[in-house]
Image (cartoon, rainbow, N blue to C red; front, side, top):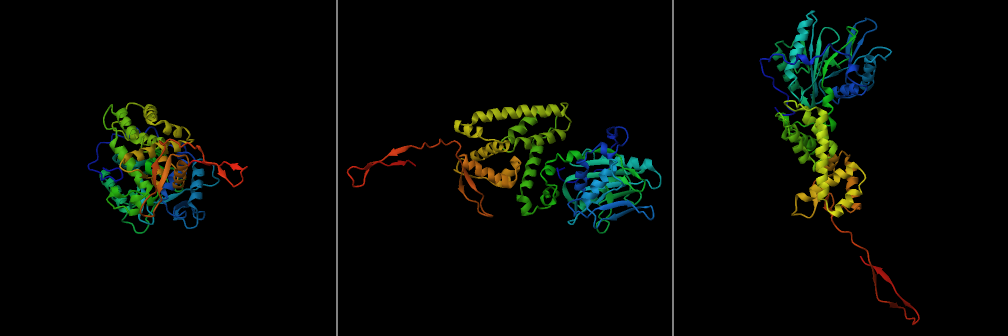
Length: 462
């Protein structure tokens, strides 16, 4: 199964072997997430919809009954903060917040299943929730949050790094329902999104929020959303739909997507994670060594470090070495590569390198030098600002400034200007060149006609 494709689950369901992952009872969300984590989760669930496109659960003051309405004038940002203050006990009055698993383009980056116990059968709801969790738990591209629904029911949230059509989400969740042996039916098992429902469908409260029906909080039993924040797509901002890679879903990406910096970066990340995956016992360090050996010349140290973390997280079987040991090996191997690379530099290159003042400049020096060596048949090479930017974690504007700085330092020389839609700027690597010495050349004396006045002039050699 590809890294971005939604899984088509097999039936029948294997025996539930993952239940030991649930240690004790559920806990309130503020024991799992910080003041930043919860707003990040809610913003992610907003699906890039407008600030007033969300669900407002509340208690009607006149009737005393719980109501769920779509917001029209309220702000999601303010409501999210109010909901969090309610969770951690600092709000003057309770509030909750929910979201819709769709956007204007009919896509979402999350789905959910609501296991109800309206008939009082709470053991059935729990059993179905655990079975659904077990069915999805081993897919590393799915980031799960499992918890109670503030009553006797359960909620299972499924997050992905990229956007997917509502129809694919609905198919996935219906497959889960089939695997656990329960029909999609109101009051029993409901899915979000459901492509059988017209319009935007129903919304669902965010994990851990206050339930106005029972005046209680959803409790979190398991969460992996925090791991999604370490995903390359999330770190790059490709959570934005305009940058989401859809090619793995069988949909042809637009020209803009195909050439966008984030789509290129995502492709590199996926290829590195695939090519250097840890898939056998005692292969962790060897695969880490290969990863560093390849990426050292292609990306910044911090970028490669994030890939190494994902490499470890996705390892199967899980390494016996703890993550701290994996990261210690990373530091050792990276330092070794850096020593060898510095030894390869000429005396002039080393002088230029030692004058650089930031880590981004050092990363750029290493990457651009590697580009200059790729095609020895040409005297110059292109440097695309967008591509340099994501490799060294700078803005495009910052990457453009860095190219100009390298020219002023005598590291690069521009040989061709940018031609829109045709050609990127081209440069020569001149950091190897010996500086030209400026010498004064004595020229013949010049006479102005006065026998007593002989002037000498000096002209500087070019």
